[in-house]
Length: 382
Image (cartoon, rainbow, N blue to C red; front, top):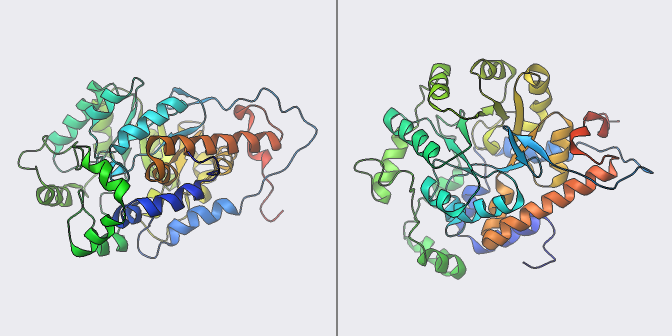
């Protein structure tokens, strides 16, 4: 890719030009007023580092573990729905880039490429994210398919049983594949690179669902099925049943309160993710980074605490680690990279984050990520 692409913001601007509006907006928006979406980034920006000098900065290491898996840096690609609509075969390309970078990739239930598609494309295990559906047999089949594909961790999302309203998705008539209306046709005509990629692949709809649910085979039937399937009755007993069925590491995503963190510990899950779903669910909730220290203080000695939301740089990763996270998930940054340049774009995203993380850690006086703690940060208003 162009060597002058040096920030996640550079990738975002290119993706905005290349990705059809409905899919770019899907990735780059929050619910309702988008207040929590904005707070996720703003609260990171308010945290300051302590610069240290005259310290040995050689032989640095970012290696650590997440969910018991060795990683080259404490970053995983988050599960994001319709990743394959940002770029043709998007989940496969992102998984390949993550594998090359030595970090985990997490496949969403609502992916365009299926579990089996991704398993055929990579040699390292990836993680699978589960939405809890009313169709319990479908849930069980998804878990069993993930196990058969060699997925090494299951990420159970807890905060999307009722879908937060995202105004842009409604206005754009979001669907996969896009419905051809006058406005979408005009938009697609300005995105020839995207259209050519889609013309070359058969993966254009939700392949974890199509062929795996009776009577679901086209855009209309998928939309009708999914709109009825997210189960608002999900409770901690359901989490326990999933814990019993899945034999590998279980990660609980969507924890934003210390009481819920305690309940997560009680399930026996290996990890939890402090997350407000990227500001896409409960607008008016606190930012993930603001609530992270509270969760770490409450349960961090008994369960691995991870986080997502608002991370746009390696510096943000380091701030989260300093405040007690053992690792982070990135969603929008890698989607921007994917939309901007496919697999190479995701690779550039991870390269940008790794370089920023490494250099910032050194300038804060550390050589090993495992030694980083809150002492690298200045006190608030200090």
